[in-house]
Length: 221
Image (cartoon, rainbow, N blue to C red; front, side, top):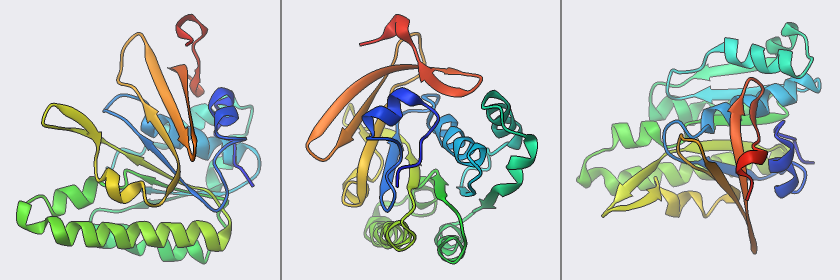
């Protein structure tokens, strides 16, 4: 069953929302709205009476933003009590956060950001094989979580430049597990996104408002 993100245009392109039993990968440069969309999806889940778990690997989670999104959705502030936040400060803590979610009753799992700690802890060239092995194991755990619980798993990720070409961090590994990919553009007056599903791809324009990501008719494509 799909979990709407709260952004109707994106949900339509995703086939109703974040797919149950599958990983959705949201990636883009800093300031593009990745974390905003993650919080928006959590708020949408809470507003419908569901529960969510967010694994915060960056230390930037602030409940005030989710509360604002809940207000915009007409939901009570008490809905925030159904959001579990796990602060992970190492790869080991990030990996360990998956098992409790598997045994819990969450309707949505979020990892924001999925690659940051791996790149921080395993940044040297000699550590690349170990980093890739550990990250693949983590993605397998997230895929198992999605399948066993039949819930959506949303991960956010950064992009980096390689030889002048912008690419998603650890994209080869992520793309083996992500059913849907949402590419968000950088900050600026014209924000464009792309949804990629097996066999199809579609673009959309968006802006970031009080309720999170929403349509931007002035910039529509």
